[in-house]
Amino acid sequence: MSFDWSSKRVVVTGGAGFLGRHIVARLRAVGCRDIFVPRKADYDLRERDNILRLYAETRPHLVIHAAGHVGGIGANRAHPAEFFYDNLMMGVQLLHEAWRAGVEKFVAIGTVCAYPKFTPVPFREDDLWNGYPEETNAPYGLAKKMLLVQSQAYRQQYGFNSIFLLPVNLYGPGDNFDPESSHVIPALIRKCVEAQARGDDEIVVWGDGSPTREFLYVEDAAEGIVLAAERYDSSEPVNLGSAFEISIKDLVHTIAEATGFRGRVVWDTTKPNGQPRRKLDTSRAEQAFGFRSRTDFAEGLRKTVEWYRQTVVMA
Image (cartoon, rainbow, N blue to C red):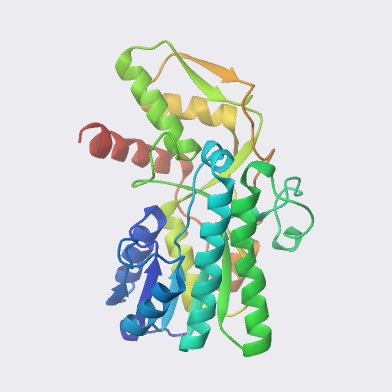
């Protein structure tokens, strides 16, 4: 199916963020010339009036909703109400007003946190409703999951073309390395690099190391999202992942090796582990729009560490 990006106006919410910047870069690479990124200072997307103004000013053909109030386990535990409200209000109103404005297609970016806590591995899209999410990030996961319900309802009643994608944990250059809100890979990279610089002989890591996670390189995620925007026309949810699973214990040692940290790892078992396992079934994405991740985990991690040292540490 041919798709001419050069004729499309695209709004990318969160386009100045970690994933969003890579989506914008991918759109440019495939020939999209008219991309608008709403900045929070100008468009607080929790407020309906700002959304109406955004659509009136930009008149987009497509909206890719990658904005979100996100963070790691600590941030989710400290601010559950904000994670729920901000993500719900942004998503529901953006999709509703996109339908009212006659937008051709709405691409909603969900989260692996929407899956039940004890989902059989690998996570299949059909298992999304078979239980409650892991408690530490349930408010965030459920707020994002409502976009799936809304997408299906609006397609059924109005024939509105919206899709819902479920990326697994992302990593890569440009990630958030703030210790108060970062996810596990950037948090561990920073911890190891700083400990090495100080000459510390140990680092402390939350949990006991037993949970497993799957990670998707951010450039691969952006490629999958743009492919889905081009080729996918269904409100059935689709996983985006790498099909590579690693335990947190092995992840810590891999990052320590990649950063050159040679000290001990101390596990703080008074802190939560989070969801026991995460690994996605990625077959639907390959069958529906031809997406497979391409970046080897070790290579992606090397690039991420290199970016952090050159951009953050040397800044």
